[in-house]
Amino acid sequence: MKIFLDTADLGEIRRAADAGLIDGVTTNPSLVAKVGGGRDITELYREICEAVDGPVSLEVIAVDRETMVSEGRKLAAIHENAVVKVPLTEDGLKACRDLVKEGHRVNVTLCFSVSQALLAAKAGASYVSPFVGRIDDVSGEGMQLIHQIRQIYDNYGYETEILAASIRHPMHVVEAMLIGADCCTIPSGVLWQLSKHPLTDKGLDAFLKDWGGLGTTL
Ligand code: G3P
Image (tube, protein in one colour):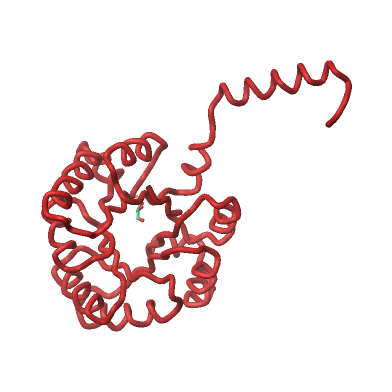
């Protein structure tokens, strides 16, 4: 499963990329608003694309087909790693189809149902982003949606990649892997949480204490 970092924070992206742990990045307007105040956003997007060796989702702001396509072209021109992100609306699906016909890769975002995911695949999306955590937030079962999308995509051979998004904790990542999501986009806090285990810390403390008894170094 591919791991994408769900952030527009260059420091966090470089930290994870430096460790060789991420296959790409996803951004959205809210994530950019957290770090982009006073910045040239095109330049920020270019730096993000240069910081990672893989797809970087950059989202349109328009809500009508024509302007989404024109924004999408501009975003795609920023860097070869850019993937245009459009919302899962009627206009978004049409813009997706238009951009795909021009050879661009598209991530259809804000997916909350299996029927929406079907249409994203029909529109030729490279990725569909079901928002697991936000479904859990309203007492739904976000992972059930990942299961269902996996099943319909496999039933009919759709090649759109399932990009599990709105990931809130390590078990979301584990469950997405077990189901067979193609990618998971993860906030940096959750990425580093994946590396933690109290028995690792306890075991390391014991090793270092025992070694200390030798009174020597390597
Ligand atoms: O990339 C979009 C998605 O991951 C948002 O997550 O936590 O704002 O629901 P969240």
